[in-house]
Image 1 (cartoon, one colour):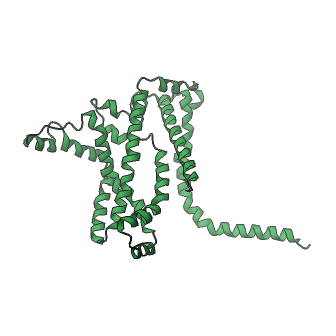
Image 2: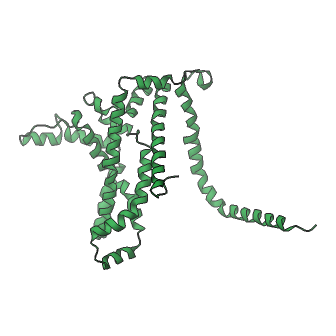
Image 3: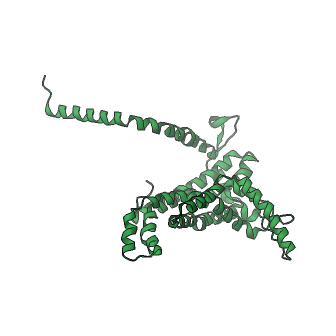
Length: 314
C-alpha cells in the first residue's frame, strides 16, 4: 500500500528526531553523573523537610511521628533571640553582598590591566592560595597574631608602648575581622570567573577605543564593565539565594562568649539547638524558613533582572 504524504512526513520527522537523539547520546551520558548527583544528594533529601511539621522521633520514623503543623515556626518567631539572630544574619549577609562582592570584580579589572605576564601570574597565584586554606587555619593564624595576651601583633604594639587590641574578643571588631578574612581568602578565587568574562572581550574594541583617544580608565568603564554586567547580575542573583547562609564553620570558629551577641546567626543557632540538643524538627523548620527567604529573593531579583533586559538565571 502506498504511503500518503502526511504519513511520509511523520516518518521523516521521527527519523530526524531519532538521529538528533543519537547524536546527542554522548552528551546525555556526560550529563548523567551530574543529574544523578543532584537527584540523590539534593532532591531526595528534600523529603526530610516533612519533619519540620512533626515532632520527629528517629525511633518512630517519618510515618509514626506525630504531626504538629506550624508549631515549630511559631516557636521560632516567638523565641526571644529570634530578632537578634535575624539581625546578625542580615548584617553579615549585607557585608558579603555589598562589601565583599565588589572586591573580586575590582581584582579582576586590575589583573586584566597588568601587561607583564610573569607579574600577573605571580599575583594570581598569591591571590588564589588562601582559598585552599581551611577556616581553621585562617582563624588560628588570626588568633596567633592578634591574641590579646600573647599575640605577635599585640606583643609588638605593647613593646612600642601602644595598647593591646582585643580583636578576637571585642564585639565591635567581630564583623570587621569576619569581612577581612573572607576577602583575603576568597577575593582572588572569586575573581577567576570575572577574568574569564574579560578574556572574551573582542580585542578590536580596545584598539578602536585607543584610536579614539580613550584612556585605560574609560576603556574599563565603557568596555570591561559592560562585558561583565551579565556575569555580575547572575552571580548576584545566585548569591541572594544564600543570603541567610553566612558560613557556619567560619563564624563558629570566631564565636566566643564575649562576642555571642553579634556572632550568633541562624547557622550556628541550628548547630547549637539542632545538633547539640537534638531538636531536629525545630531546626529543620529554621532551615526551611531560611530557604524560603532565599527562594523569594532569587525570584524577585530574577524578575527585576528580566525587567531591565537581562536574561536572569531561569
